[in-house]
Amino acid sequence: MAAGSIVHQANEDQTGSSMMAWRVHEFGPPDVMRFERVQLPGPGPGEVLVKVAAAGVGPWDGWIRAGKSALPQPLPLTPGSDLSGEIVAVGPEVSDLRVGDQIYGVTNTRFTGAYAEYALASAAMVSSKPTSLTYTEAAAVPVVAVTAWQALFDQAQLKPGQTVLIHGAAGNVGAYAVQLASRAGLRTIATAGTDDIPRVRDLGANTVIDYRTQRFEKEVKDADAVIDLVGGETQERSFQVLRRGGKLISAVSRPDQHRAQSHGVEAAFFLVNVTSQYLAKIADLVDGGKLRTFVGAVLPFADAREAHFMLERLRPQPKGKIVLTVGPDHPGNGSQSRFPPPARPDPGGTDK
Ligand SMILES: NC(=O)c1ccc[n+]([C@@H]2O[C@H](COP(=O)([O-])OP(=O)(O)OC[C@H]3O[C@@H](n4cnc5c(N)ncnc54)[C@H](OP(=O)(O)O)[C@@H]3O)[C@@H](O)[C@H]2O)c1
Image 1 (cartoon, protein in one colour):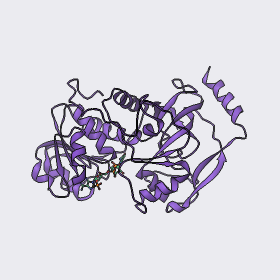
Image 2: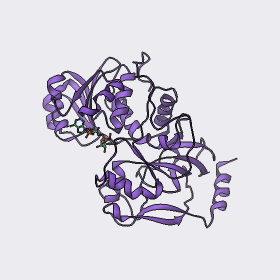
Image 3: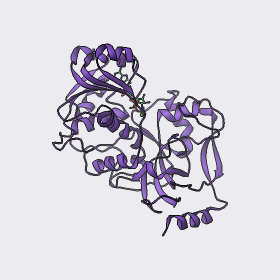
């Protein structure tokens, strides 16, 4: 069926339909979030309408709700970007997705719209859900896994045999970065808290430094790259562990360029760009048992505000991603946490 007729049919079916969504009418603390009945949206050019099964919750959702996003965020808005679910309508100019496709990915470049029963997503920012994962597991993956990939291979441009220091290796992005680095044949040095050391080693790190008891700059020198997922003074102390010409890549904040120059290194901040191509590569690795996925806490859709209290640390925050279950889950073949054997270097390179 042509995309246009699918849209037409979907729009007809949905005329007058409504859905539940979380809405922010004014920026502020989690209390500003309202659970409301709103009109079902229709997909525009390049968009698909997704019946949301699960939505991931990330720190950036909290910044958007609080009005601290770096991007313009017109109000009212629906928070949420990571999502998984089934396509129920396809807009014009979408050629490779169909109604009924089970997808995962993000909604749009503003990172909004996923905490809803139905969400519009840019067709270029979703891909087929890993078949081995449940919807809940899949919704935890997109932003953090793609961030890890792009930091290592696009920003730092690391090649097999090189040495990388990954800060924050036990975190959501870090756990993917360690696995991807290790698989790509990189010598992988990681920093993590005391309790997380065995887990990070198990993910494939060659060396794990306890950030609570050790000074990493005493243990590491001539690294080809540092992946900074922590920021602050950890970032500042990282210049000295790089070889001349090495790269400091931060997903947290803009590194000091004077310091970079004086150490003879490159230093950059980057924002993730989640696209179907990256999601497809990650899905292949997951389904091939080569990349483990992690879910921290699973909350019902109606508890999105609770999830934001967790983000603000006003409630105990679990380790790992928070995921909201919006619709019925798909059993997949997975479980909440997948633990295949530790990654081994891939002689074929980075799989990019
Ligand atoms: N630029 C982008 O596009 C982009 C995309 C995604 C994420 N991010 C950012 O990337 C950062 C990491 O995200 P995430 O989701 O992985 O966060 P996360 O899950 O909270 O992980 C952070 C990890 O860093 C550890 N840590 C804290 N202080 C440390 C230190 N001094 N040395 C080493 N490790 C330390 C924490 O350990 P403890 O449990 O011991 O505190 C935790 O395991 C966040 O700032 C996030 O906003 C940016």
